[in-house]
Length: 157
Image (cartoon, rainbow, N blue to C red; front, side, top):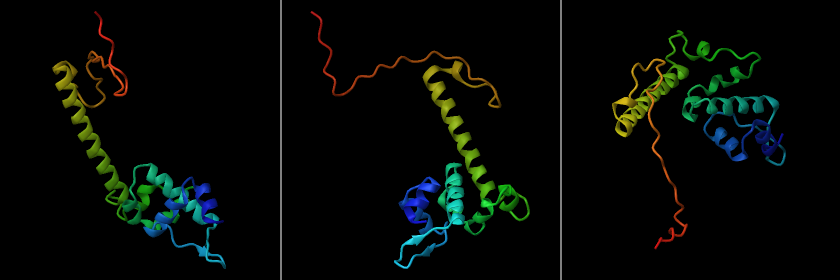
């Protein structure tokens, strides 16, 4: 399969495919007699795994650190990510680190949201218990938008 066909089959662009190859996520494919990349179904399956993992919040650097094991996720059924993540099962591998980063970001965004709600609406907008508590009701602030290109409203006499 040529690069355009392989990229389309994996749901990416040829440029992304070349990037994954340059970053070590995808081994260099075989070449045709004319030097064009020639992808096999196993490589397309790996591309799909890469796309799925990137869509799940992993970074290219995360995937680079475990590129030698990405082929395992093309198995049917694939192994649990956490099972192959850290040899001792501690969750300190790629998946554990990504979960810790996501948890920290969720905490940061929650604090940011609470601070903004307090500034905008006072104490009545603050959360009581973060674990499953609904936010206190607040009144939405009316917002009016006017296009910068729109002419000013006519003055009334």
